[in-house]
Each structure stands twice: as structure tokens, then as C-alpha cells.
Length: 568
Image (cartoon, rainbow, N blue to C red):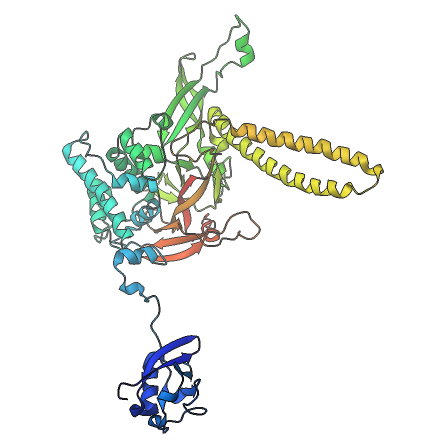
């Protein structure tokens, strides 16, 4: 009897098999069941399912040895009632963010890491954060070619150290969830750009211009990512196929990603080119200066800000598109071979090749002469007037005729597809209507014939859409989405706060790569996406509506550099 008797315990949906040892009593049985189920003994009720055991709920003082187990039908069954109160461990172990390795914590952190300010380095921190989410640039930095020694060994070593430290800085940010100190990159920056090492009267580092740092960074990156193979590998690493013909002269990764090929046309105002009608008349005497065309490569567009308090301004710029259009047209003095002297010419520039990433600089700062001052050195001033911008920028009007023709094909195709989708939907509705009309009188037959004619027109529109889908649309730049329509979406902004051009504070605003459920901004078609604002080491979430308020007009942050990417 000391070995016990096997019994089956039914507990809810579970079935337990144990041995009952009569000498241990009811308390011993309950203690064993508590270990198996977690039901406390004082909340446990045991009732028999087999005859010959006991009646009702067994009491703790009941003598189990008084039962003749040989006469009880096998298997012996009892019923356990009671709820477990003992906490059981979770099926999946909970791991806290603080316990994760830095690399894993960075992947699941709610906010990306910031950069510590090492003495007026907000100009650097803001630009670095905005460039971080450009996959083509990150891919190129990860696969740097051998050093370029054309500028000399010493300069080449400084450039390679600068760009290598930028790559290492991004790698460090990818592996941490905490703010990071860019000490090595700041030192490399001051070695490559001595002007950024300037200090004030008290020895403190001076504030620098974020646009100057951006341009300098791209200049070095262009030297260190030279070569068609580097371009192709960098784009291929992110799943983009780039042909050499798409580059249109770009020899390095920076120009392939940021480069804007501009076509400039110079016309003499005093001797304008002859009209097409005049040129068609043979022997017609014309005194005119032929237009001069040239191509140049830029890494940003400029939004020229005029108007406001300047009474002499002829154009009042209130939107970024107006400022860009203003910057693409200008007047200059140039020698006229026909007149034999300098004359006024009009410069008109248009975009002949589009980049995957479009950067726009707002002309916030300008140099003002001070003839009445003692040193006549002049002073750097800031334009505070508001200039609005939107989440989508359409650059169709700023392109050459050739580029516009290519973009128009994509636009017409998209429009035809939309019309076809609407037509298909309407056709389905009309089929339902026709089914109802079949049950009406003959007097309504004319309406049915009219619907049939409209159906034929809808089918013709759909056929036109299918035909246009077969057309091969040319590319107007490397790495652009298929059937690009000339629209760019904003994804990062560098802002400046303060009235002092040589002071103030820079911050970076970057669109989140992981978007949740988005809604439109009230009374607009703008999607209110998730963003992050980088105030050096402090990172906070924000929305698109907060970014679109950075247009200026007060002492708050205002857009200085805006980063757009080609919209799919």
C-alpha cells in the first residue's frame, strides 16, 4: 500500500495522472495536486467520480486508508475543483530594452539617436541627420573605392579620413539607441575645413553655416566616390539598375544622386535673336546676336527670396516655386560681338537632367554693405520673411522642353489609367442599370441605345490606355522611379532659428521611415506623416503639419535646406 494506487484527476479540461498514498492522508494528496496545478489547498475541492470512495467533498480529516481500493472500478477517478492562483511564467520571455545589446536596442527604439553638441556643432549635426536617410549615399560610403591621390597625398589623406569618419559615424548611429558624440568626425571636419575651426574672443567655437558644410561635405564625397563602377554598385546595392547613358556625364556618386544638369540660354536684350518667321525668309537682313547655350552641373536649387520690407523688390516671393523660378532667370553684362561692346543679356536656365534627391536652399542669408562703418567690412544679414512650401514639389515648369516631353508621356499615361479605371467603374454601373431597363417598356429603348454608344466610347478609352502602356518611356535621370512624373516629396529639412546669421541654432527634421496609419492635414490634401526633430542630442516626434509651419516670418525655426526625393 505504501506504493499507492494510480488515480485519474479531472481538473477542468485537463486530465492528471498521479498515485494516491492513503497513509499521507487528504492533506498529502492536496499538497501533491497543488504542486501540479497551482490550486491552493484551502481552495481545493475533491469529489469522487468512481463509486466506493467517499461521498461529496472530501474533508481533510477523512481517513483514506478506510477505503478498499481493490473493490473500486479501475481507473479510479476523482474531480478537482478550484482556480490556480500561482503565477506562471509567460510563454515568451519578456526582454526589456535596457537588457538588449546596443545593436538590437537601436532597431526597436521608439526614436532614432541624436548627436551631442560639441561646441556650436549644431550646423554639422543637423546636416548629418538629414543625409542619413539617403540609401544611395549610405551604400556608397559602405563601399568606398581606393583613395584618390590626384589632389596630393596630404589632401587625399584628409579627405579619406573625413569621409571614412562620416561612414563610421553612421554605422555607430545604427548600433545605438542613445545620443552619440561625433568627436572624431568633428575633428576630421576641422582638419578638412580649417574655417570651421575658428574660435571667438573667449576661445569658444564659432557658429558656422549649415549650407557651407553641406556643400563641402558633398565636394569631398564626390572626390572619394569617383568612377562609373562606384555609381553602379551603390545603386545596385539598394535594388536600382543604372545605365551609363542615364548618368549623362556624371562621373561620381554625389553627382549621380544630387546632380542637377542645368541648360543655360543667354540672349542679348539689345539684339534679340531673329524670330522663326524672319529666319524662314531667304536673304532677309537681320541684325541680331545669336543665343549662347551651355550646360552646367549643380547640387542644389536656390529659392531666391525677394519682397517683404525691400521696397525696391519687383517680385514678392511667397512660395518656394516662385523663388526657384526667380533664381533661374537673371540679367548680366556680357560682350556682344555684333555691338562690339558690353551689353545686357538675359540668362534663362532650365533643368536638363533630374536627380533622385533634390536639395533646395532658401536664400535666407545675404551680405549687406556698410559704407558708413569704420572698417567698411559689411555685415551678414538674415531674411525673416515667410516663404511657404508643401510636401510635394512639381518641377515640370523648370525643365527643358525635352525633359518636359518625357515627363508628359508619364503624366498622360497616368491620367489615361485613371480615366480607364473610372470608365470601368462607370461601365459596371451602367450594366446594372441596363439590366433594370430591360424590364421597362419599349418607349425607353432609345435610352438603351444611347448607353450602348457611351459604352463603346468607354471601351475605346480603355483600349487607348492599354496601348499607351506599351510605350517605352525614356529616363530623365539616374535612379528615378519608373514612369517618373516630375514630382518630389519632402523627407528632411535643416532649419535655422534666430535673427543673427552668424549665431542662432540649427535643427534637423527627418521623415520617419516607419509610418503608422496616416490621415490628411485638416482642409488639405497633405498626408500628416510621422517625423522626428533632431535638436542635437534631444529627439522628439512631430508631424508633417509641424514641418510645413517652418516657413519663417518670426523668431521660430525656418527652413534653410529642404531635401526632396523622387516620388514614385
